[in-house]
Amino acid sequence: MDPVFMAEVLVRLLPPLGLTILLSVTALAIATPLGLALGAWRAELPDRHPAARLIDAWVFFVRGTPILIQIFAVYFILPKLGLQPPLFVMGVGALVGNSAGYQIEIGRAAVQSVPKGQWEAALALGFDRRASLRQFILPQAARRMVGPVMNELSQLIKASSVLSVITLFELHKAAEAISSANLRFSEVIVVEGFLYFVFIFGISLIAKAVERRLSAAGGLADAGSFAR
Amino acid sequence: MTLLQARGLVKRFGTFVALDGVDLDLQRGERLVICGPSGSGKSTLIRCINRLEQPDSGAITIEGLPSTNLQALRRRVGMVFQQFNLFPNLTARENVAVAPRKLLGLSRTEADARAETLLERVQLAGHADKLPSGLSGGQQQRVAIARALAMEPVLMLFDEPTSALDPEMIREVLDVMVELGQGGMSMIVVTHEMGFARRAADRIGFMDQGRIVAMAPPQEFFDAPPHPRLVRFLDNILGH
Image (cartoon, rainbow over the protein chains, first blue to last red):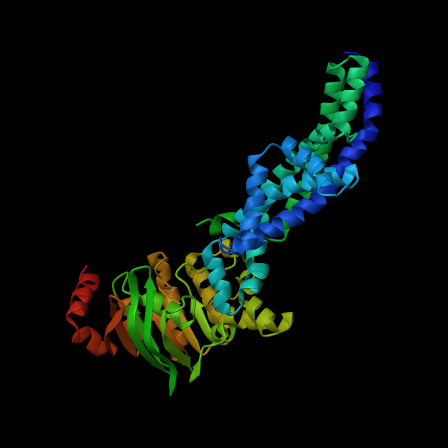
């Protein structure tokens, strides 16, 4: 291990890390609200509803295929359909498609895990279903989403490394280029891993702060009492 | 004056017939207790009244009006559940104030004031800022009663309100219900608390296999049970 070389690699990897952050954060900003909202909506739909089938098919595809295939699918099939968006858009699109697929399940499960009695209490007071969902069910579901969503955030950041296969010059692609140009792999891998770790750790700190705020709002105070 | 009139209510769950043609009349201010073995349709009956269950056939009118608008119906009919079903992320005060504020358009101050008054009425002044998890079962159920009362209903439904409570807390909930009845509230109470029925009911109905098979004022109900199945039921629950 050559510390001077590693320092040099670190500096050279900062701009590609910037692209990784940009890709991941853009994808997160779209996939999380989209996935959770679709999931909450899906929880309310009957299984036979066309929208429910479409959402289920999406989740099924995302879960059932490797992210590599999903990225290639976007990269090769979109142009065949006459769509030629910039690489960055394709990359974000692939990440959103993947991550939202998982977050749909998080949203759906969280809404469905709120006890039926909470719905009945709201309905019996005279709230309609939509207002019951918004006023009482979602706030309780939201706190159940925090843990799984945090997990999904780190999954998404790590998945962004696979975008290297469509020549996006993000962190992993850049690290590959440096290591093969210099034929020095271990140093580059260590620095690359360190940068991913720092980024994910930073995101998790932010997520923890969000979790604390939800908790302060009272949503976390009594998870036990409605676990019945 | 008739407050509630139900005719020919039928409710099936798959092949199980939960309600098998139930007729029921309730006068304004009347306190009706419904008892019966489990599975006899008691809970289904009151859940059909506020349409938490949709009856397969039959008609219900409240104050002479058919219950076509679900939300409007439910705003006039309060319900108290066996499992309390308080909103766990809201304080006692917020649990009581939320519906009048969101549904009746009361300001926060007005709704909070209404909540304070009602919490006082159920002997919970001083607990307004607690979350449900910080209250005992009996206290939670009294908050639930206050929450239902906050919509100023014309009728209160109680679905086995003391069945999930430890014995020493049953009394405090029943006392609140007795007082509510004495105040003129129309009530239908599904319960096995025969002491409460004797003390507070105007009439007691006995259900078996989806039908109301006996209906009588407390004295007659207990001293001269008008149905053989009821005689056995009373032996079972009073005899132990």
